[in-house]
Amino acid sequence: MEFQTNRSITKENPYRICFVCLGNICRSPTAEGIFQHKVKERGLGSYFYVDSAGTGAYHVGEKANATSRSVAESHGVPLLSRARQFDSDDFNEFDLILAMDASNYSNILTQKSGTTTAQVEMMRRFDPQGTSEDVPDPYYGGLNGFEDVFSILERSSEELLNQLTPHILTE
Ligand code: 4NP
View 1 (cartoon, rainbow, N blue to C red):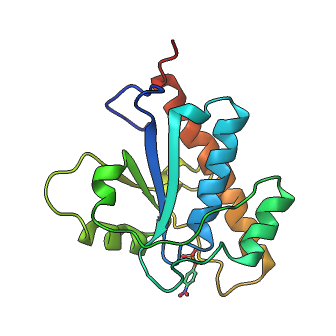
View 2: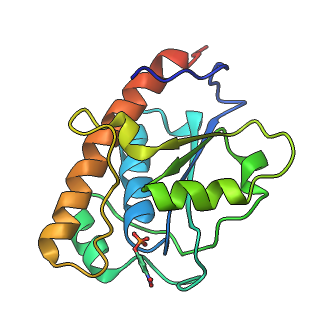
């Protein structure tokens, strides 16, 4: 499904994306790292501000999970974030809030109060191979789970960036 954003993206007004999962140590830091890597590769770093957060507070302050980091690094993507908890201010800080699964999505919406500009969407809305599904939580699974998550987030991020690129206004 084609994504609609209602504004142009400029260096003065970068497009702000927050990827959100439960712990902010596996899925959303991986999405943040992949998307950041892609915008840098395309020379678009100054047009985007990318962050991630977790709906839960269990891992606040921690680096990304060691397996998430080693899988991402094996694909050339460093994961540098520290976990933080999503909060209601994020609705005013970001243009787009992307939930990794349906539970994250409903937890995000419970924090919403008043009028906000942020759009909240499911990450896999952008997955060319499975647009109505969750990004599965790899935390209790084996290495294959982490590799699967990386692949899902790689192709979803690619499509997301492809859909946002026409909104970029270059001087
Ligand atoms: P994430 O994975 O939401 O992809 O970061 C999880 C990490 C930790 C926990 C749950 C999910 N936990 O319950 O500690």
